[in-house]
Image 1 (cartoon, rainbow, N blue to C red):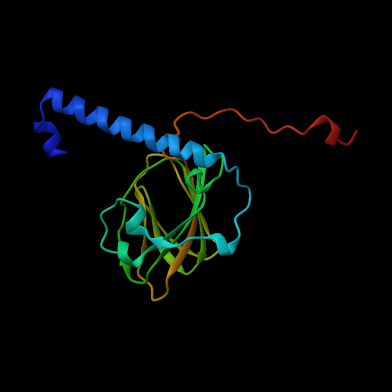
Image 2: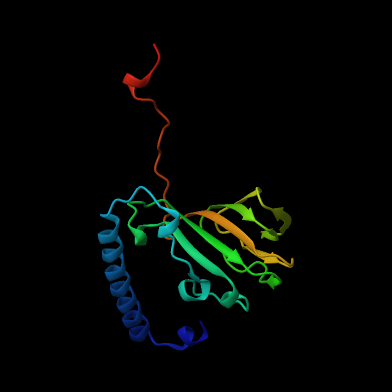
Length: 176
């Protein structure tokens, strides 16, 4: 950020325009992939990768953490409001409160960890859920000897407005 503060106005404007253009190209590709209109994910379709390959964060444990997108527009789902992914943290990793984003829910599939949400610290284990409010610093630490595996449902990055969606039964499905 310091280098940005030293840039002159035309340079800032030019950099912004280049980034907006690149984001537009990426959005066009994501929208093309949404047209696959997938509804099912089979276990054998899951693609695991190092978290450091797909998430631009600074953390000493990135190489030991794996990540898998489950339901997301980039893997062919026509989804706009949330995404689902699974992450696995290696034993003895410690990153603390390292990022913010929109609302999320984490479900712990296996192992144990310490989950930080704002100023709160929670001991979590397989079967537990944690809600993370939007724009709240949070992160997971695994000081234990076994890996921890977490499924997260996260508000899609860039989603800012909620769309009302009432819970209504179709008239032909009602018991009358």
